Length: 432
Image 1 (cartoon, rainbow, N blue to C red):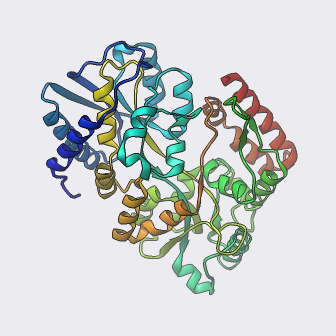
Image 2: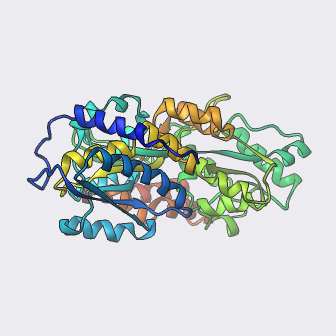
Image 3: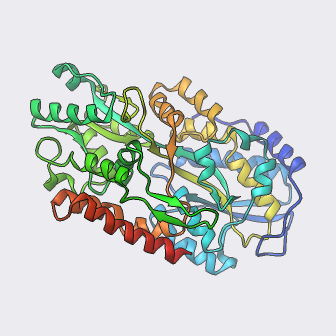
């Protein structure tokens, strides 16, 4: 990891301090203290030291630029974040000023009244204009901005170069070609899954739905609400295409119906599959596996030759809690933690894909493995509905249940998708 020079951060911090807009009054606290202690919650990574070194550099520069301010960073486990965040929203005295959060949590946190509207400051931030549109969408609820994107993650197609060479295969250029290639691998090499898939791998299945013109849900005009579209004809076509991959001719349902994303990547890394849908964040795990030096990555193909299937744009954001009594400082620190310089350093340290296009292009120039993921982002990505109801849809496993009912033969695509649509509409309705 390259050590970041503190002066770079110091100059940026001073510049932001000089050009920060006047604070607005939507904070739950009526205070905007210009000194004191800022509390920050960031996610604990599996290997956290490189991340902490980058953050420490940002904090050191920030504290030097604000002599009477201290920054207290706590790294919290991702698995228990829901309880910690809920407690923080209910008890502002225990809440941090600044917090990292998963981008699918944005709408729910806004609904709960926990995140601060920083639309004005984000609009005045010079770097904001270069933010990836989908990443910006992930901090936007009802047209207002509630944080800054920290990094983005997308999935692409990993494939075994040695197996493809042995069988005389080329990487598929269409979704239909992907299915036929998976069958070809399985037929020639029954010891392998052709394309390892998972009935609980929601984000691996979504590109099939989107590529066929389907949507998860559609917005209800200007009301901010959503109506499920998972049972539309286009969405059903994608569901059928994805679930057709569960069978003895590719990935047996008895094994694969319960697989999630981690299971599929693990199987590929262990040399048990010809192909897998994995993220840029899966690269380290695959490199550490049995297929090191025997695989490559291309964008997941779309319906027509040369097209790219829309991928889910995952990742994390950093936002300010509404209860902060240090609004101006908290927003400035958020901008520093998500700046171009910091995101470039986080890529070097952790492999996190930057949310700024120019920084991402620089990363791809340095690391060839990033190129197919950058191409996927450039091809157009999708995000989940910006509704507090999405967390209920996600946590109650509405989509995995739908896939698994089809895979098991318990329900037709039409019946399973209609039931899923009803559950989604109930969740969206309960969220308001």
